[in-house]
Image (cartoon, rainbow, N blue to C red; front, side):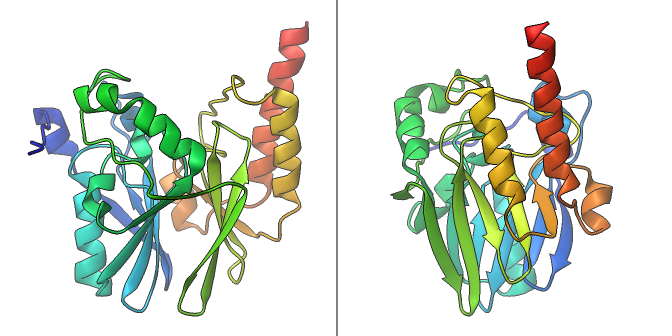
Amino acid sequence: MWTKKVNALDEKINYIDVVDINDHLAYFYWGRHKDHSAMDMRLGGGTHAIYRGDSAIVVDTMNLPGQGERVRKHLQDNYAIKYFMVVNTHWHLDHITENHLYKNGSIIGHADTRKIILANKDAIEAGTLWGPPAFPAIPPNVTFKGRMDLWLEDLKVELHEFAIHCEGHLAVHLPDDKILLAADMLEDPIWIFNFDFATPETQLAEFERMMAMDIERIYASHCNLDTVKAGGYDKHFIKNNATYLKRMIADADN
């Protein structure tokens, strides 16, 4: 039996700001907490949910024990959601903390996401991989590579793999809305790059591929809440991340 452990500070800040982006997309933000020991809590972030009728796709399951429960309850109480799917955009711990809430349903992710979570299961559940909190390491039970399409009634939801940020990272595209949920491939205000799985040049090419998509608005996991409320980011967000990476490469060569 898993016992949830949350420290006193986490209990105090365990609230969620909800932004209704449109009538079928919401953002759940855990806030920025400058005194928290975890970088992701200081940085600020959250997750998205896409819904239609009585069904929802929850895109990632938050960062601290209890946050994912609040997201699920909000969807049930405010949007009358009865049926859930989860999409894990990638394996990082601030995106999978409450996968266990959905372990009896479909948790969709890249094959690499499942592989990495299983390889680190003991450390995640002991709270030693990146430090506490500890939580059940539940991997995706539906996996793919490259591209996968989902449907909520007549609403198409595309999952696209990009070699940016970490292996097996997925972006969620809503083509009818021309909206991209970029998760951690685009970040504001701090961009974190990892070159162990893909070269900088490969990742720059992936930004170009993203630029070519038919998108008008972009939302990310780690972002500015006021920008979300004002309608999100545009394609300059992609260009700014790519430009930052190009400058890092140029500085490294000097």
